Image (cartoon, rainbow, N blue to C red; front, side, top):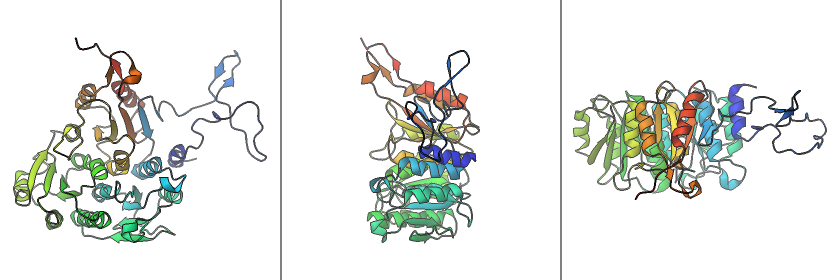
Length: 394
């Protein structure tokens, strides 16, 4: 079995813990091979594990891994985790299909992932439907977006047409035009544009990654700019709003002051920035302005971790920020935990005075297999999320 297929099966609940639900010596159904017991008897009469159980790589007490070998598998796994699809009520309305190489369109497509459309990101490969994506679509069986005439697949500049699904294609010449088209589709589905927009740097993908989860949670679009020039499509998307609030994501070497001055002619502008991608993601996680921003400055939150070298994982993970434990994206560097992220996790670490049952908890999703995020890094994150006893305030 390939590692990609194993990743999908893991989130379908297929034998993560082989045989742990069976009991006694009941015979398997005719023609089926019996699953091994959770423990087998060793020669010294001590119970022994029959083989790898998936832990701690699959999960620890405070982390859950989406174990994809690439963003294609990660996206399929997240779609199934957030939309188990065992009943009609747990199916998505649609899926959003984006080319695996077009990370910017995928991040903008995250706007369609949350409330109003509920179309998780799935990735295609040119004109090909990858196996993981096809398996996910077959399981998800989208119900159709009523306000989009029952569309089940929203294609973002891709020729791929999933068999049996009604689809619509968003076309545009480049990321800025596609982001504008995605925003127009979201407005069509929800009935009105959002008040706020995020403008992200097209030439600095790691600085743009945190915008995906917020777009999924809020429905705010992720629009694009170069360092020194604001695309006309970005201007046009902003102008569909009255008195827009514009949030620029990234430092001056990613989005220059000239672009900010141009944006100030369109609405109120505020820059959210950090010196490097990890610090930038933390700044966005902490930021709050009225109803915009995560404002995660205290314990009791969901978090998502991805590596800064894999920008498409931000889009693949976006549905995790729009459901369940809702939370911002934080970034690792080459699979390692930057000091700034460690300090941030310590700052929001949960604590309790007398009984941890009465406390609040942090939980993290990790995007990628152990070659992307090593188990050692996972263990460090797990430890930093653990609720700790604290002395009562006198």
